[in-house]
Length: 224
Figure 1 (tube, rainbow, N blue to C red):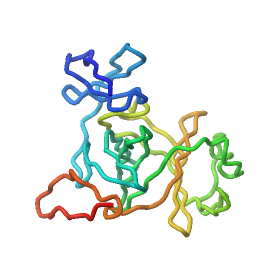
Figure 2: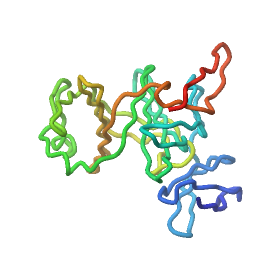
Figure 3: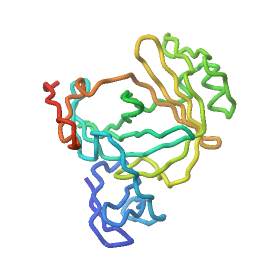
């Protein structure tokens, strides 16, 4: 854990993960970037629009015998809607993304694109496009491109592995398999990142600290 002062308002900013370089100030919403002992402000993060997600910063849970806490979020949008990507910090210091879209949850960890050795993924990473329905082979399993579109960052909060200014547009490709495996390739210019995981349920994550909402009773989950 690292504590610094916001260069804009002077408030204390806590980085729970020393490995993450970016943090949105909880008080003034300045995007703060940390490099060693130095911190700098790179502008204001946009206000997050209201949504009905029960997940929030501080929600905790357990996945595959390891505790995690939600420490960041990016809200992405496209012409027909938007979704959340929540950053999870695990007890061993690693992190993962919990995608939340249309009532489904996808838990994804980053993998090096160069380790995948699949033609369709290599084409996408290099700046090309492939049709929806294209098959990719990853670890001997067939994943199918289910969606490909340009998406734009609406807003962000908490700790992040990168800066996420409002209006930042990337090319995002979703893949899925018949077994419940899912993946996402996100491309910004010549840079491409690949995230691999599977669909999960709230019950499986046994979360605590969910947001209370009018008309919705907080569920009780059995500890994982």
